[in-house]
Length: 231
Image (tube, rainbow, N blue to C red; front, side, top):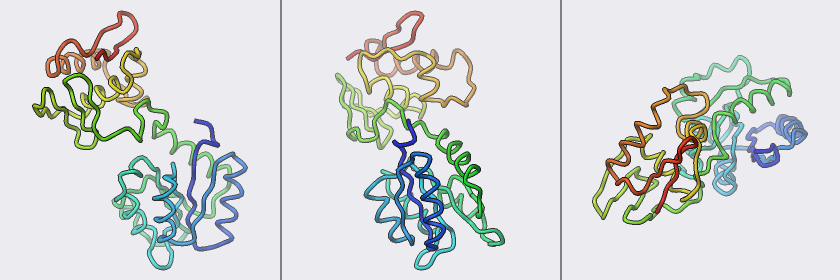
């Protein structure tokens, strides 16, 4: 994704900090939204579904920790990256922040170049370009298979099958675009993550197990390239 495709919500009760952060992030091409307290941040985030939230810890009404907890209650914000902003000297447990669902702690004041670098590193953790669309329907029907995205369950001829997480994600990826051939590299990146090292046979083993459970006809091997889903 290009920078202009990323939406960042900056939350701080100090107008000067909001202005400073917004100015420097806009210079990098990001689309910026701002909120001056936790309640406004929650309301805005639920509407715009930001890719990243920069969240001050110490705020009136509700603090950053509670705000983070409430943001994490919305399934639509599951992939949203949340980074806490904390002033030097604030004795606030980082553990509490991570337990609330935060992804990083950034100490302010911070130099713009350092902040941009930190944000780019955070964005790399999430594959926003994943071929599995966020807004896809809860239930996906392919032949005699029904895939429940939320419950991580599939139904084969109305019989419930519970798959291990990686098998489910592999099936979901392949079935999201029937007929598209996914290379082994694409599958590794989108199911296991580009920074995870796994054995060469990992995909083959998972494909074999999937075929045993859903039938041979759905997943086709394209020799020398990868795999595709066939309805």
